[in-house]
Every structure is written in C-alpha cells, then in structure tokens.
Image 1 (cartoon, rainbow, N blue to C red):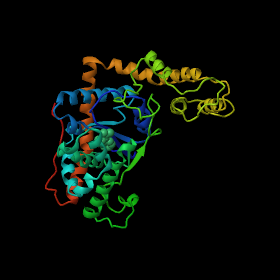
Image 2: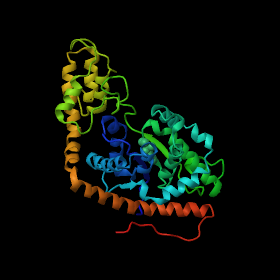
Image 3: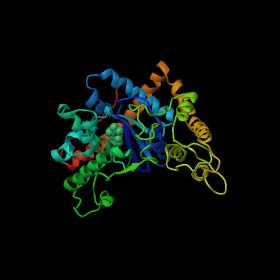
Image 4: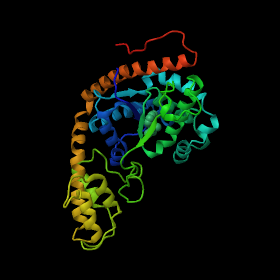
Length: 363
Ligand code: TRP
C-alpha cells in the first residue's frame, strides 16, 4: 500500500477484556480521529499477552478476538486502517532480536514502566525472561511500521523513549547518520527509521467513580462502554461530592466536574461551551444541583456509548467471529507488506541481505 499520509502505530495487549470510559478518552477517541489524517496501524499484541498469561492460551485467544470486536464496535475502521495481529508478522519477531543488541540490558531493566508492572503485578523475581523482553518487542512493533506518531497512555511513555533510543542508534550505526543530527532530521540524513513521538490522549487520566483512583476494571470504579443505559445512570447517581444544595458553591475540580469536562460537549450561553457554563454556575452555586448535573452527564455518556453497545451486540456469536477472522486476515496481509519491506531495508543496512523473500498467509 503506498500512501502519502504519515503513519501512526499503536496497540493493545489482550490480557483482559472490558473497555471503559478511561480507555475511550485516554486513547480510543484519539485513534478514531487520527484515522482520517493518518495511515493507521492498530496492533493486537497477542504475543506480549503471554508474558503474564503463558499458562492460559485460551484466554489470550478469546481476548484477542474480543479486542478486535471492541475496536470494530467503537468505530475503528479496518478498511481505512490496518489491524495488525502481532503473532502473524514475522518481521516483528526478527527485529526484536536485532534491536535487543542495541539496548543495554541494565537500561531495559531500569525502564520505569516495566518496574511498575513488576511491582503491581506482584511478579517479583519470578518473572520470565520474556517479560522484560516485551519492552524490546514493543520497539520492534513500532519501528516495523516506521510511524511518526505513537498514540498511547502516559504509562507507555517510557517504552516510546526506549524505542526512540533504538531508532537513533540504528540510524547512527547502520545508516551513517551523524551523532549531531537532531531526531526530526534523521530520515533526511539517510536514517531508515523516523524517530517516533508519543501522543497522549485528551484526558490522560480519567478518575474512577470513587473520585480518587484512575478508572480501572480491577478497582471496580469503571463505567464500561457496554453498560446499558440504566446501569450508566445508576453508577453516576452514586457519585458523592459532599455538596448539600444547588445554591452551595461547588468545587469545580471535583469528580462530577471532571466528567462534565470529559463528556459534555456543545455550546452553552453567551459563547461559553455547555461544560464551561455548567462549571461556572456550579462554582458560583447558581441554582444547579448535583442531581441535575448527573442527569445531564448520564444522558451525554449514554448518547456517546449507545451506538458502540449496539454494534458490539451485533458482533456477538459466530457471525461476529467470522467477521473478525476476515478482518485479521486482511490486516495481516497488508501489514506484512510494510513489515517485510522494513525488515529487508534494516537487514540491508546491517549487511544481512542475502536475497528477498515473500511472506503471505496461505488460504
Ligand atoms: N504495551 C502496550 C499496552 O499494554 C501495548 C502495545 C504493544 C503497544 N505494542 C505496542 C502500544 C506498540 C503502542 C505501540 O498498552
């Protein structure tokens, strides 16, 4: 596929299912918008899922199919964008090995995202060799598609930094790019890899219904994209702010107001957006009750997620599975064209080219 649009790559690891509003404002919404301006690659990191689920392959498989259904339901479009199933892209595995030689072992082990994961998942000293390797693999996921941007949550920024290090080093070592060349100029200076940048979503951290922690499935403080309308409203009604009456000046940074900012769009009075107007009146205690705000929020959120819920339901069952199978097949086919080209160019730069091969799915 030749296209003049700049590329982006991002992805999810199928270690769990259950998308919630935090995922939406943190990354999915971003992806939806970027589909118009960029040549997008969305990767399902199913090999990485084995870093923690090696003993549960059926779960990885189910989650993989589930993620593709989630993406389709949310509105990612496999015609405009390429869905990449990591395990079917051999170039990614090969580049992982080659890139592993460009990263000091201790630097990988100091990667703060990895360290946090080892702590929060209680992996301690018992994690596999492959666990830290996945961070190197992520460099390959990204660079295989030579993107300019990588839309991710803030927790992934350390990985993108490592990926930039690898790309800089590769270009310097094997493509003759000088040490002084700034990252933006690497390709112009003969580098194979553009030095990619992270792009964090509109709301980097959406607070959960408890008003304290980041929204997360495991903390039980989430509104899921497939909650029905009643459940959504019920969850919102349970939010507590401690405010007593519609005329009490409210805290404009409390959880309700954060949600107003995140989910209520449109225009209000006198050139304000509706969200600004609500916040102004809330802060002033200008006769606006929590109950009113909650009703308006519930309506806005339901309007946003209703079409996703409907599409997700349509994808349940065998017909949906067959559709996913086809989306994966087409994505893999397209992704391998780009991936094989990158691998060939990388090997050539390293003096490793001894002929060209083709990769494609049989049948
Ligand atoms: N590690 C990412 C996560 O768990 C998923 C991922 C894998 C990814 N490869 C990637 C994200 C490449 C962006 C780019 O969320």
